Length: 205
Image (cartoon, rainbow, N blue to C red; front, side, top):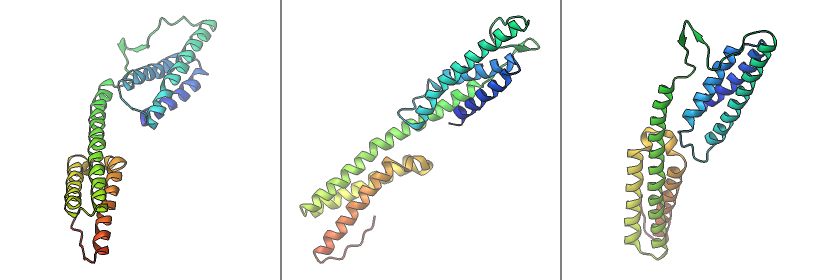
């Protein structure tokens, strides 16, 4: 999100430099935008706010391409020699606008997070299923099955927390927190049913 926001700032900077026909600065911004777009296309952002922001990258690149072309024409009209294409160099060495290696490393981290998120979503469904089964069993006064389903529910939730959520606050939200709410509802209903029958039940989960 920060990189995409930075590109928008680079686009504004390029427009300001364009007023002085500073083609080199605009081309650096353009190369950064093109490199960023190329790398981010390899990420799987799914249908998220990040994906919506990413959709704006291609429009920034198009505006930078148009700006570079217009500045090149203006420089030619002003008597400057036309550019042959590509980014200008300093001391004969090609300059780099963006570290692709850093973004490639970021993609590895992001893909791992995305895989963990998928596992949390998948396993959280099992927690919800066990919680609902416990409630259905309680409604039928099948105490033994209800107790086993609640115990299974707690085991599944603890496994998710230990494997994924304990090291990532982000993964504790959404599906996992919703599954915990379902489990808490089943435990509460279990206690209410026992109290209705005249028993005193202390939750140990």
